[in-house]
Image (cartoon, rainbow, N blue to C red; front, side, top):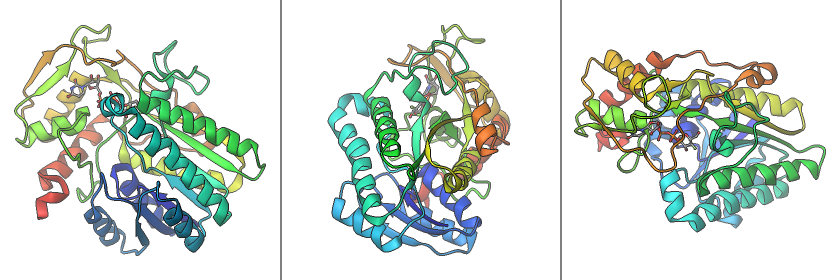
Length: 339
Ligand code: UFG
C-alpha cells in the first residue's frame, strides 16, 4: 500500500515508519521538523535499508499538503502531526486548536482532493477524562479536561462525520495510553526539545546525569503506593498497532475508536524501580505536590484491539525501561548527541 505519514519523523511516527517500511509499503513522510529531527529519518532508512519520500511541510500549509497528497496518491494516511503537551495547551489553547483541529481539516481537504478515503488518527486516552469506571473501554463517556484533550476529541467528532458523509470513508481512531521506550537498536527514541514533561524521558535523563533528581508528583493518591498509576505501552508495540490499523482500514469502512494500551497499571515508583533494574543506575527522587490536572489512576481495556485488529502488547515494563535506557545511554543528548 501507499502510506502517507504526517509527523512521520516524530517519536511515535518514526517507530511506525520503521514498522511500515519493514512491511514493504511505499511511504511518504510529511513533517515540519518543529518537534522532530531529520536525523531520525536517516536512521530509519539505514535500519530498514529502504528509501521513502520526505516532504518538509506544515499541515497548516493547505496548498502544500494538498499537492503532496495529489502527487503521492496514498491509499491511507496516518496522522501523527500535532502539538502534544498538556500544560502548554492550557497556556496556548488557540495554538492547539489551530494546529490540531484546523491542521486535520487541511489534511482531510487535501485527502478529498487526492481521492484518499482512509485515515488512521493519533488520538489519546485523554479523551476519556476522569474515570467513571476502570478499565476504560471505548464506550466510556468522553470528557477531556484540557485543551489538548479537547483537540483530540474534536478531531474524533470530525472524523465520525466525515465517515458518515461517504460510505467509502474509513477512520481508525487509536486512543493511545502512555507510550514509552524505544526501538531495540537504540538508534531512534524519544527526544524532547526541552525539559521533559513526561515521566519516562525525565527518568532516563536523571539516569544519564542530565537531571539531578525526579520530582514525583503526589504520594497521597489512592493507589497501591500513593503515586499515580498509568498504562505504559512500548512504542514498538504501538507502532505495530498502527501497522495493524492500516491493514484493517484497507478492508473496512466507517469510524472505529480503539484503545491502544496494555491493560496493566503501573505506578510512578513501579516505573522507577523497573528503570533502576534495567539501567543499573540510581534514580534519586523526591515526592512533591500533585501536578494540577493529573488523574490518580487509569488503564485500558484493550479487548477491542485484539478482537478487531488482532493486536495486543508483547513487551512489558522491564522491556520498556531497558529500551529507553539503551536509547538514552547511546544518545545522551538525543539526536543532538552526534552534532
Ligand atoms: N510524573 C511524575 N514526575 C514527572 C512526570 C510525571 O511524577 O516528572 C507522573 C505523573 O504525575 C503521572 C505519571 O508520572 O502520574 C505519568 O505522567 P506523564 O506526564 O508521563 O503522562 P500523563 O499520563 O500525564 O500524560 C500522558 C501524555 C498525554 C496523554 C495522557 C493520556 O503525556 O499526552 O498520557 O493518554 F494525553
